[in-house]
Length: 499
Image (tube, rainbow, N blue to C red):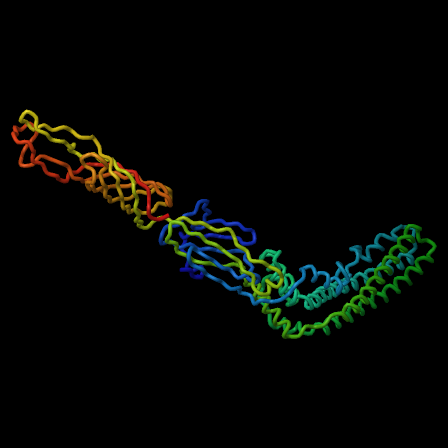
């Protein structure tokens, strides 16, 4: 009888069969160690692990010989089509392409452009002071830029989360029934969609308070954008001061040409970066118009999906106690209704065959045995008034049938006992009953060849009334009797019961 059990019930010495459905591979373990040719002893349990099995697409049907066991899909049938790439396309359209919000200009800092200028000894003190003021404005712009970059990181994360909120629910539903992806990949991609939406880091538990807070992120993002624009405004003001310092420095007659060129480059670079931040601020404004906050009900449903996918193992376990010589497991995957509508077809996986050993087995065989009595049979006659004895054949061929009882070995050779009955072939012993008892050597598990030897008992003709060979006897008919005597035998037989 098949039962679904918790791992706490599994015994260390039981055989574990691992069938990877997606990869269509099977391997075996006993006590945590791999085995190449599995066999299980009677009384042991077999634990079948069906791995990488997408129960959002298929119901699993396990058949063993005459028993069926059906496991319905643990996920509810959800409809959804299309490919997983559609989410990325929607996200790019909402966030402006591969660059997300587009923030993060090149890594060269504004202040780097003004370093090392006006250090000649022949430059006047006033010129040096003005150069230091120019550098101080660059430093102020760098500080403001650091604030902008910090706001940019927050906005980038929140805009990504908002974009994912619009698509995560439908996309995860579609992913769960994607026949071309492995369950491991489906789980990983689902987590990638859900974590940014729910604000979960790594595999930490879901925070309900965070879910509630995220029901209205538009106002928080709006406030951040305003802070961002304010910082860009401050940057613009510092740029104007920088331009004023540059103009004064350009009028200095003792300013070297090399430093004059460096001033121009520093100012132009800063002006371009300020213009870039202003452009990105406008881009964020435009992106916000395409985003809507999710309602609490929708976010709660995403939370349920997250918890479900986090705990989902995409596997089934079955425990079975085989009692036959050979057990065959057949696994069939039947699509759920929603998967059938998408064109998913049933799958019949490769069968798993398992040999069983141990336990007392009883079966029968028929063959021929060669019998030799301890006292050789004789025939008697009267010659010249004396009783004469002639030795008969050294062995007798007898058609034999045996009942064998033995523990089935895990190998192809087993040792047991046998009891048999035989009928003589030809000669004076034709039709007489002979009995056998002894050990057997059984070769094979299905179709068996058996070698048996041991003691035999059968009827033998002997002189009666106390006569012995050589005695004087004047009558024509000798008094004889048929008695059972012991001997030994060697037989070969073939099974007629069982496979």
